[in-house]
Image (cartoon, rainbow, N blue to C red):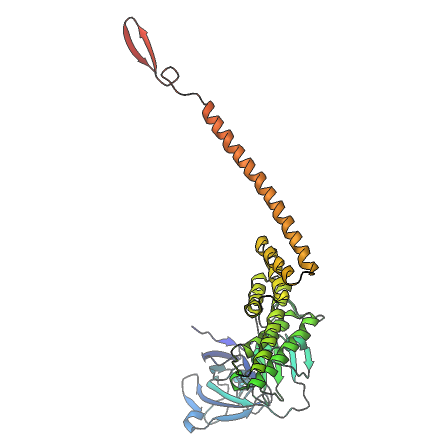
Amino acid sequence: MAEKIDITPKQDGGVLKLVKKEGQGIVKPTTGTTVKVHYVGTLENGTKFDSSRDRGDQFTFNLGRGNVIKGWDLGVATMTKGEVAEFTIRSDYGYGDAGSPPKIPGGATLIFEVELFEWSAEDISPDPHCVGTYQGTEFYNREVTFHIGEGSEEGLPEGVERALRRFQLGEKSKIEIRGHKYTYGNNPPAGSNIPVNAPLEFTIFLKEFEKVPATWEMSAEEKLEAAKNAKDRGTMYLQKGNLKLAYNKYKRAEEVLEYEKSTDPEKMAERETILNGAYLNLSLVCSKQNENLECIKWCDKVLETKPDNVKALYRKATALLTMSEVRDAMKLFEKIVQVEPDNKAAAQQILVCKTTIRDQNAKDKKRFKNLFAKISDDRDDVEDKPTNTVEDGDEIVASTSGSSNSMA
């Protein structure tokens, strides 16, 4: 069951919030935004004194500008779109000792049920795009332009990018992000004094954006161009050492062209060239991260259409060798030498494989020799063990005075 929480900065119990219906996402309105709500206001005894629902019109006001009682400015700023919340507002956060006659007496505690529908940003063109804070201390204040998915290059955590996907043009909102996946995790910005996995707040103003068409909306030419651009950006990030972004861009190139079935031979040839390049680079990224099974998967994608591709063969063989699949790796290195007789790297790896196999065979031979020797020794012990007889056993037969007695 939901509990009332104190949302006042001083934690003095002046405004208590009870969520009655969860809203959408994590984006919240900020100071200066114009918000639209429905509300029902009652006194503590249940007497209703005001209701926008009864009037049939949503109530609109500028958040944080003193247009409403203090408890409202605090409360609505904590809400997300579609949320319904109940706020219990003490008089010092409401109408004070004077009240609002005749319906609200002086010193009255008020209860408001509020539903937040939407908000729009004020004109803040001179303001920065993005401001990040930790416990009220600003650590990020910049105007940035970037491709969605590449925010880390601008020092932005994953949670900001996730939130931006839901923004409307011209929207200014505050977001709160928590958890290893969405904050900076174990890698906070240098010199920021932000602890590992610390919760963060960002205020973002989306001034402009360019919508990328969905794959199904693209022509064959547009798909080829989009895939090529993604692949080129992947290579740029690979050269910078940003393996995560490099992988994402190469994967994007693969996704754009994966199901393209143009009948134009030239376009299909270009598609195959871009795809195989993306597959090879995906295998390289995986190899650098010791993700051997993934590396092999992307190599196999190339080998489906180019069974003699030396790069794919070499990377797959190297991954197999790392996984101690030495014989399978050696077969691939040998195939490379068949395709390129002067390939010294593959020839050297064949020698490595042969040495590894020879050493392993010697270890196995020694191990089995010791095992057989132990079995032979155990058999000899069994043969040397005396056999129980009547004389040696638990029963001894003795003859005395013509009678036979059993003695234990």
